[in-house]
Amino acid sequence: MTQNIKNILFLDIETISCVKSFEELDDRLKPLWERKAQFINKEQDKESLFFEKAGIYAEFGTIINISIGSFFQNPANELCFKVKSFSGKDEARLLKEFRELLVRFDQKRLRLCAHNGKEFDFPYICRRMLINSIEIPEVLRISGKKPWEINHLDTLELWKFGDKKNYTSLDLLAALFKIPTSKNGFDGSMVNDCFYNQNDLEKIARYCEKDVVLTAQLFLKFKNLPIVSENNIFFA
Image (cartoon, rainbow, N blue to C red):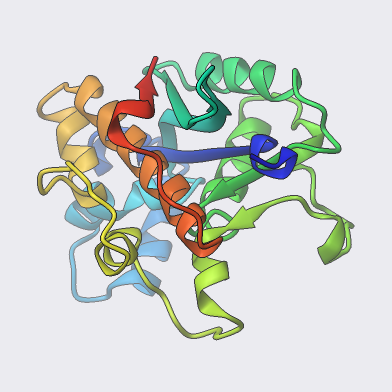
């Protein structure tokens, strides 16, 4: 296994609306969401749209889970993958713990990888860190950097091959490359309901971890390398 693969940290985040309903939103934010809602969907009422879509936007959402994973070799020189999650209702604590992990790595060698990470995960994390008065670690500071100075990887970008208009979901790519998954029909659109109505943060974390595994396996496929066997995937 090359050192380059060892230095990649794969990640995925799960986000929800900052409060359960539009009515609970801060009075100062309500008219701002109404304005936002007009751009998203003029036909849908602002209350239901808030529950369905607010979590996508860092200004109206919050992070409840960050799952990470990395490759390593076992004593038999088999490629393995380990996964862990930072999960909870206290976003500031979650982000601080995630930051503490990131700064332990060599910031010059560490590379972050996510599916659609450059458009969603990485900027979302940075915005929420700023909102929570948390210093952004060096590996996430991209302002003013040249493209070749940014260490982020994005499996969606790798699949685009320069095609700006194309979006392909992680699940579709996993199916195309015949990467096994056990997400059992759960998807990102169900996270808000799962958190607020079912109070099942554990289910959300497990779902997020499976996406991290899929992203890592897909990355191996892009490198024409065999995927990691299920027996060599470990969850903390």
